[in-house]
Length: 315
Image (cartoon, rainbow, N blue to C red; front, side):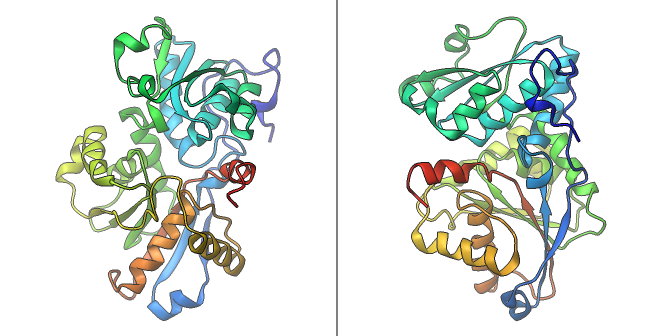
């Protein structure tokens, strides 16, 4: 399949629909000695394989935001992120593929433009605007945003989490040919969790692993994005597996992730999916997941972030 995101703009189709590489994404059974010990079955929903550049939950979150842009005649996407943001990386690729201009408001110094994430975003045509932390906190202030936007601009929230992201994520549930007892996923901005709540069956449980410290706000954000979540039973957010905070991880966690990948053949990174998988096994060890459970783990992508971690000398 042609990767339209890599074509020059003169030959790129002027359509707003994302071109998936693999849908439905693969569902892989995971074999590990501890799973037999805990008497559970585990599958991984490989959303990291949906698209080579618009990976995982980013593809699903952006699908209907791009459709909305088309319906409203918008030509410009504006969003926000850090210097190693998976979302910024994916949005730039999606804009390039879809014939839309993109702008990223980046928290940090302009020197970061040479890193792998932002170099790729710039290569796909994204305009990068670097702001300090104080300014970045105003990213939801319409008066501050007015300097960057026009009538044809769609503002995409940080992480891609908005009500428009919900139906794209909810479609994931229909791709799994059975009803699991438990869904497990990493959680930061709440958009993927909100979409999964919208799509799941009543009997199915969801365990979201917060990958950041102080994640008590996430439940409120989920209900803001998907109000019906407030009255939907069967979902919870585990707040004690952040290992120090967002984008932080100990040497022992990273070693666990590498060992798990070597044992299972499942590629993971330590910020999102690796940390969530580690959290799942901690939950199993604590006896908080019933024996006999059928579990589906959602791999939300983000593997491009490994290059940034190597650049920083963190792995």
